[in-house]
Amino acid sequence: MLGRVAFALPQYAARAGRTCDSCHILPDWDAPKFSERKKNLACQTCHVDPAGGGMRTTAGRYYGRATLPMIATSPRPFDDWDRNFPGLGRRDRATPYDDYLPVGPANFEDATAYNDSIHDKWAWGTPKGATRYGPFNGRYAKLNADPILRIGGDFRFATLISDEALMFPMQFDVGTVVHPVHHVTALMNIGARGQSSGYSDTIDDSHSPYFRELFLMTSEWPYQAYAKAGRFVPSFGLRLDDHTSRTRREFELDGSLPESRVTGVEVGAVASYPFLQASCFEMASKYEAPDPWDIFDVDGGWGAALNLGVREFGWSVGASGLVRRRSLDDGGDTDTYGLYGSFNPWYYADRIPLTLQGEIDFGTFQRISGNEAEKLVWYSELGWQLWNGFNMILAYDWADPDRDVVDDQSGRLQFGGQWIVIPGVTFDGRVRYLDVATDTGDDTDVFLQMHIWF
Amino acid sequence: MRPALRLLVVAALLSACDGSGDLPLDQVDPDAVPANPTYDQVYAVLDNRCVMCHTGSDDDDDGDGYASATAGEAEPDLTDCDQIVAQRFDILDQVEDNIMPPGAMPRLTSEQKLLIQRWVANGAPAPCN
Image (cartoon, rainbow over all chains, first blue to last red):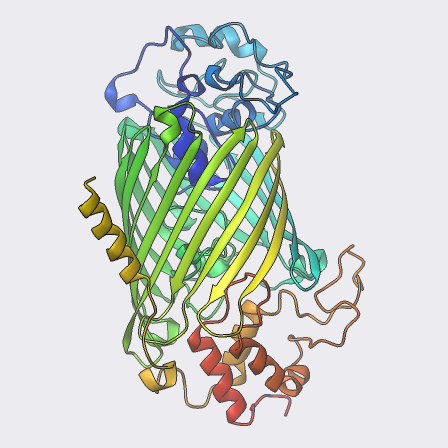
């Protein structure tokens, strides 16, 4: 499939199968042969990194313009025409509102006629060696379908209100994608790790900014196979954008930390609909942040990860495994196994705009003593798309970081919503309640976020 | 899914997610953290979990438009060795009682708490004292 992005995430990906014309030009699209199909609801459909997150593909950018926002700047899928905020009506000028979307060429041969209609501020050039089933101009309105150079950004400004209010820059990422010839892509994403004490501390941190991703990739092979080498976060479970989620943090997959990045090789294939991703890597010590600019500062041990499953239109199931092997001084061995999935009733019934997703992870780790211990974590989320651009979220995560230890488990309930006003601007507000096992420590906060992405 | 099977799945999930062990970490595994933690080991925890707010900045003293968590109050600068040592009992109380990190932020792990606890119990050895 071609199309869909956004700042959040697995949930929006799980919904992508609902509207055919977010991917297909209806009604006359000729389906490619099976091995060339992109109909997979995978991270790599919308993100350059097949593990998800960060720089978006043109399909992802288009999804972010056509489907996600309250006011679309690319033609909105047919099924969403009448899902606008009450009173707003059909106001966006990009959607024809008279038929399905005959936008763009029906095939590769017709695509060249659309080259002159491209006006894209953040993408330049056309790579050599275009193939029949690569992205081609015209399908994504005025966006450059397959640029040589793309620049993007991801900025988040947060306010945390508990006993007092903290306003702080949470994330500053600037990404560059170079795609000189077909099948070859380089991604560089430089990010600053947010500090709630302010902008200057964010930049002054000795481990920030740093290379969040830096890899060379060959992709767009049959069954959407790819191989990448460099710095990345291994594919594992649901890549939530909440770095405090325990399904990420407890297993050293916290996306905000340089320590979570590894250097290695990942290969994968994401067909319609099974997927398989495997990686092997070296990593820094658990107790020491690596050099922010040296992706080969990884003398803390090695690891491997496997991620596989099936993503259908209305549901998905997946399983992940991740092992780390290192000395006790560098963090000790860990084995982690996860099951995750999503269910999208909205795909089956238009009156039920709900999406569910969840993950449960079980892991063993070594304490500093060398003794093995176990941890258990799970995450669940229910999304309710009220109107175009308005998504309500109810989520709960729970973690027991050491199954042998009393009173160290806690659960966290979140309720809130995301409002994507226009493409690239999202407001996110949540009330969060933490329930700890001890007599003291239960607390509530309000977390507000403004997210700029392009 | 048949009701009985559904009930079984729910029961299995709930049983997996009920309370954990019966003992605190130092009784489960006395060697879970070093007997004599170093300042560097403690600082690594503070740096990872506390310093993002507790830098000791005043109201917008760096002119970036934002105040730190310590705005207008005499809260510890957890980048400063002297202040960490001076405030060690407060730090320990706050993390042991799960007061800090604040709000709904995940609290410190048992391992991190025990590390700080033993460091304090050993007289808080540090380069600055």
